[in-house]
Amino acid sequence: MAVVAAFLRGQTAVSQSNPTWQWQNNPLPLRQRTYLCPTLPPDDLISSARAVLLRGNEVMLIRDHRDEPYIIPGGRREPGETVLETLQREMREETGWSVRETAVIGCVHFQHLNPKPSGYPYPYPHFFWAIFAAQADSFDPATVEEDFYVTSANFKPIREVATWKLGDGQNELLQTAVAIL
Image (cartoon, rainbow, N blue to C red; front, top):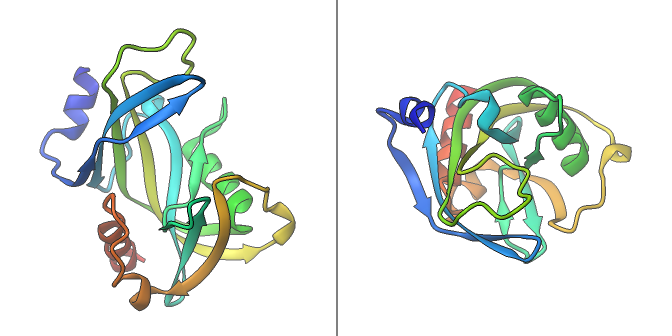
């Protein structure tokens, strides 16, 4: 796609991997690359909004259903939502926190490696996660929704989390978020 190539021109990935996701009974092999960049990808290709959520000298740490840590909570856009509306909604649903002072710090680019499955409703063959740095604003535990993938969400000291090998470019995203906010 020319628009994807134009957006990524001059960018260097800070990480790459080849995960396989599942959609219904279809394996979805993907090429995944994380980029640090101050601009959003093409809007119609952004399927998800995520953030490195900071509060003072702490970062939000999520534990997933496999007890793996990650620092970019967020999720899929719903029809009619702007990227920032998705970010606000997903932060409240996953962490209970509203956000302020957001800044674009990067994106994750995915490319499907198999033919499009019949009935697949999402962008294909390319899609992006928009990644923001955000400051935590206010906490409302009533907004947290139960989620199979999120088993806990807690703030941890940045200096501690920065020493972990988080994978998929998350360490670089954390460094960038701290430098910007």
